[in-house]
Length: 259
Ligand code: OOG
Ligand code: MG
Image (tube, rainbow, N blue to C red):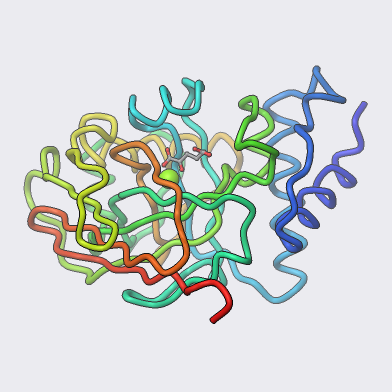
């Protein structure tokens, strides 16, 4: 039986020191998905002990592009803490990460709690606001390679995120064009429809998966619905912009190395 506490500690150290570690499943091939979520919970407990606060949830592998890019085909989730949020047009120092990538997403902010099986109408009624967002993912595993259990234990690679201006949810969010650019050059483009057909569907799945784990999506929480396209490797000095139809723009500046 693997020692879940020590595995959580290993991942916490890897994240804090920006140094890659080996996949947990290499030494523990029978690690279960339940074990992986238990490790994730312990990993986040270390951060809470250092004063961080859970402010939301991220969904992963909600698009075919992401599943194909990472060779995984199950929905996963992770926890967002206040320390992970960067202000719109803020600056990020890549030295905090091992091999960070960025991806275009849609974010919801909740005005009512959600937990367990809910329908689309109930999920929509719980949304206070919607915004364009980008997630910075950084696997703590060497070469960004992992099995499903590894990535779940590693908080589903979540590392940082930036959210644009919030607005009230509107009728049809199922086919909004999204263009992510580096220094003005488009590097990824897609549609919000790539996210389970509609980002609203991702919220329904988030409530279901959270409910299975005994977690409630709380009022005020931010839910990242998952990337609409592949992730792009970040590089020093780069200016990243996401432009999303009807949702607007969100920006992130990457610090020059040595600055
Ligand atoms: C896992 C996280 C996936 C998404 O939006 O699909 C994810 C990874 O790709 O390392 O955040
Ligand atoms: Mg993501």
